[in-house]
Image 1 (cartoon, rainbow, N blue to C red):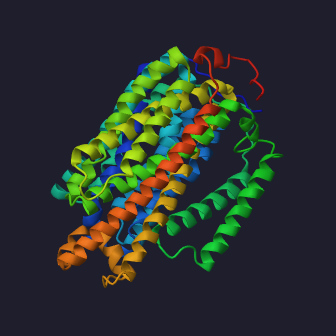
Image 2 (image 1 turned 90 degrees about the vertical axis):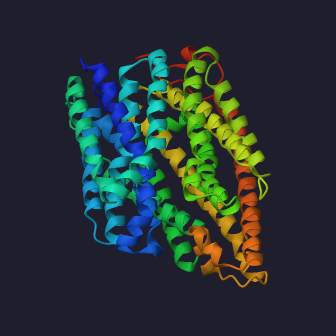
Image 3 (image 1 turned 60 degrees about the horizontal axis):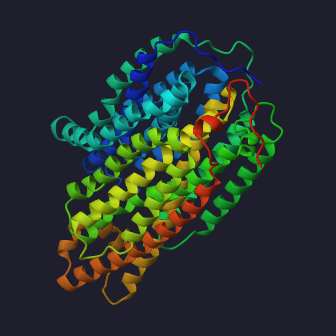
Length: 508
């Protein structure tokens, strides 16, 4: 096994600042781009494929997460982070120079390959430098950074688009990214790089990339259509599952596996993977469909729809700090259980929202969902980092984030399919709305003003009914996540932590 680089004399305050800057960069990107997309469509066209500007980034970032984690364990945190940042900045520059929607999608996918490493590698660096208590205390800084970036991202994107050009939404990443590279490149110079010859799991990389890439494409496309999978989709799904099965078989005998299967023998890693996957399904369902509810059902503006997520972010940030302090006193299980209960109650309340729902009720439900995620995600991440040996720290941290992101992709696809299946029914209820018109009315709410009042009312009620079904599915997923929380071992966090040089505890 290749030894992991050990910290010699890194500048810890500079490392914290650099990681926070990179975290801000990664969190701000998606929200800023979303604000600029209407202008981008006007400039480049490509309305029918514009959603892949987001999907391409998410797919690439998700697939690359375990690759970056393994790269950090093999080549050192400094080298892996700087390469990921360079790819992210290269994709940002090319995206800003794009002359067509297809080109923008390709460059955003490249940007996602690098962006997939920024957050998990930053968390890995901090985990390698600090112990349990200090790491828990610092979660307040990182959660606040993420929250601020998520809130100011739309403001930055709107300002740049209105006063300069939509291209500056991508170019603005460059100065932030170069500063991050300079700070971390200098601060992490104290990390010794592995000296032994490393062995890259090329077959594992190819199998995982092909399998997960195909699977995520199928999920994204199936979630966008009410017609289910077409023959080509079923074929791609079959090939993807076959590649993932081959990946598992290969990893069992690979000399230096990309995702060591021995990690699943660790009950903490196993619990965090399952709970993170299910919580990710519920979380992404929330942030994907609440803005649609505010704009499509309540008749809010685009700005109001965008700010509907602010209570969710504030709840997540605040209770991330609370859970980080709480786990030192009561262990990992109880904050995770409390968070899953909040998430389940939030979805239950959402399932009762409709045409007469007030904005205050929506804010309350989003705040409760954010509280649930804040109480859940931080304890799971810290639990995994403290339960694995240092040689697996990078891949374990990235894999935890990876399973949450995969859960999100599955959740959006499942809930999107539920939404689409209910909206398809509107075209057969005598309202004279085709499926193509329904899609346009969902994406562009201003078009609803052109409909006769009875048709407009029927559409709003149909959309409310469809979202009711979506939130019921989310409630079911949140209940499964609540059950999975009991997989998290009970006991004090200090007692469950793996000591330096100690072998991982066997699974009971």
